[in-house]
Image (cartoon, rainbow, N blue to C red; front, top):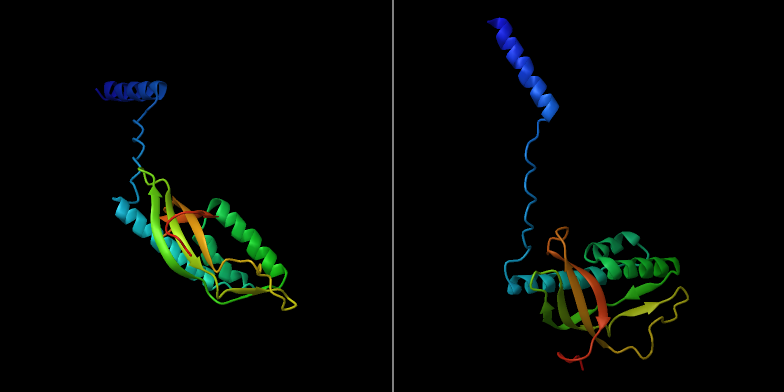
Length: 178
């Protein structure tokens, strides 16, 4: 009897070895949206931009460690632009003083799947000065004191806000930044 049990066990192992022991692959997880509503998504986008302005106002061009919070809130083109700009300004010994302030911020658009959001921003840069290593101003004399901007954000699970700034560009239209 013991021989039959052993033979049966060996046969079962051979069948498994020859056919392969396969377990069904678990289904791919369905991505869970980071936001449950447009209002929630826009609130998070606004919080992201406000945190970005706060981080930008804390940048000390003599200390590259202060660049990191700006990098953490940006992605894509914006991130690459800041990395290049901050690196060049640091190398040239430039100094930034003053702070930017948000004078208006409104939602423009959001993708139905929360894959992109756009904000309209009026950013007051009138108190920001940039000087080179000789003390000469690097600010364009024709700079508009309140910038009219469009902010494009993309979703990310790496940010506590759920968004990262992908692109910052000039904008026309409402809200006016007069």
